[in-house]
Length: 406
Ligand code: PMP
Image (cartoon, rainbow, N blue to C red; front, side):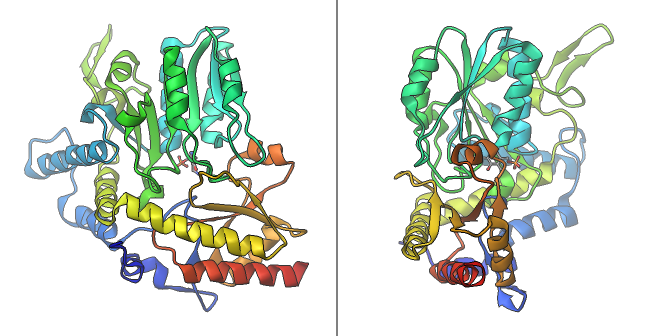
């Protein structure tokens, strides 16, 4: 496999630093990823040499920025294999993508008594916007439960789908459990009843290759900052037939065709959904990050991360005092655990003093914690630049936690 981890680590300047006189071990990748030098350079160069607002100027810089922004859209299109670049909407991130869609879809299609299905393992970003919509429209949110291993109970979905179901929203990879959900199967079931499906891909695009046409999802959302790109940029993918039908979720500059005080007509896709000056430098940075990921190979990344996940799982479980949450056979690189008898926060604090960055708490998935009756977990999430030594450091850290608190 052409995946030289020592070389790859050198691409990420932040990783070479010390924290509390220890080498930084960064396992908070589910929250946000570090940036390779090529992405940092891309953003820096843009501010240094090319910056200009897009779509508006006739001058050189504006035309260049417009071209780069639209090329970035094509890079995203090819990365997720969308049929057209019209289907790629730039947003500030997954949360914005889902909120925008909830507004737009809700305005057009949701009526009193309608039902929207989510799963018990959703991130709050894929619960609350739908709940808010349901409150506005007097519609109902229904929830597919999961088993204690962290596997969705799809037989419940079969029972839940009925003539009132308007949309199914499902997390592709759980940020709290690591489960890779069978989205293809869910989409097939939904489409048998002509129900569209939104896939929350915030934790999937960076770990597994995503082909939206093969998946056949109707909508797909993800965030740039979780795939080695800057913050403040993300994607809402939607099939053109849907995006054509849906009303815009924000009004303002660029999204319009003709504005009069009597009536406004809207711009064509994808601009209809991009009101105001977009984060064009973020979009160009995102394209640079996707090119970087593509150069390493998403499959190579997945294989590397899975090896680390299996090592971490085995070593933590071998300690005999670690409980793992999320034990589905089909998993991505998330180790969500509790050291028996130790509060996750205390575990996180001790690990931090050893230079190890993990996340503690509910991971914006409180219903997952409610399922297990726990306050939270410690989450170590693996990225392409982590290595086996860091897994060992985590395991050593957990041993120290146990000696201190156990
Ligand atoms: N969905 C999932 C599964 C996530 O992990 C996250 C981020 N933790 C989000 C949605 C929200 O992403 P963002 O904060 O970038 O909008």
